Length: 256
Ligand code: ADP
Ligand code: MG
Image (cartoon, rainbow, N blue to C red; front, top):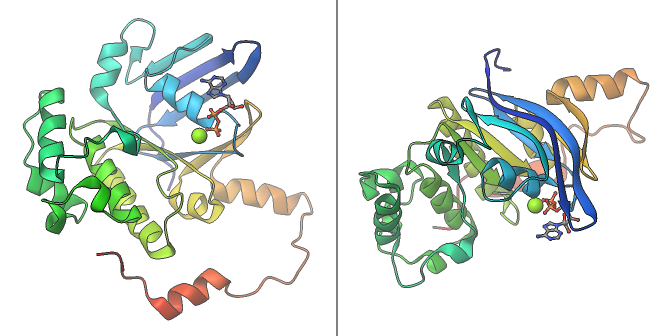
């Protein structure tokens, strides 16, 4: 699973303070080309701050960041060209339909994009004339992921893309994210769902109070815990309630 190539993102000793409060306390990590890299951690850990700094949307206090060979301090505009960032949902003009929104964004990026082709990638062809607010939660997330692909980025950043989705929509999004990665795009994702990180991410960094406290493949982190003598308090069942739910209701998407 893991990818042994050169780093596409290097973060060295990153610090970020908001006034007197140090939200990110000297974190370092690499993201390899072609991997799905997860940033995990409780609310307030500093995940979004870290992502937004790498995305050039927030100023760092100190540290060094290289994206795609470009130093963030020297070439922020080069970095912007190579990355795809999910907008907050409030960023979508309410009067425009999905086709018009894609046309608008393509114009901003100076890219020629066929809206129907892009919508087909995320299975939203039927919604081409719908407004963003008329979409279900899963459809909204798929559309906003589609918009990150407009400038044909080498890296996309997804900040909690599956929060609040039902199990089917969540699995559907996993498939989409894997497909994007299989087409050559590196993915950085934050999530609160550990089952999701376990099946989706090649490697994860666990951040707590602004520090990375673990970084490895999910398998290695689990093995280390087991080797340290950890055992689950109860006998492990062969299925969980989510398995029951998916077994009963099926994997197909319900929202359309
Ligand atoms: P996460 O995404 O892991 O939940 P954030 O990066 O959003 O964490 O926030 C990290 C910490 O920084 C939190 O304590 C948050 O309240 C604080 N914080 C985030 N943005 C700001 C800001 N603009 N001004 C002041 N504090 C902020
Ligand atoms: Mg956040």
